[in-house]
Image: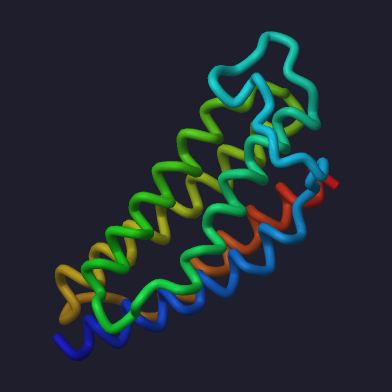
Length: 150
């Protein structure tokens, strides 16, 4: 259980730091209002509308930096909830320029959360070296999304 707790805590701390920086780096229109397109993809969704959807979901992830890593199950549940929000946001993006990066970010986060889930449930067989691969994939995908949205 200590190995599980250590891997999960380290992973959660790294991911929380990643989101704190990356969500801040994405474009923000300066408005706290959600665009109308947040409820469903618009046929002619602008790049700004698509980016606003993703910025909102990534900004929500900043709260993960306060997750209590001493309780790996609660922390994992918080990450699964956040991953669901990012996935839902990516599904709302229909803009052709933003959609690939949004989908890549959602997929990378899902891969990382799946890794954390496996590490938590089967710590004896977790490949700790994969953590850096997941973190790098997530970093790259969010950086690309930030670039597209800047």
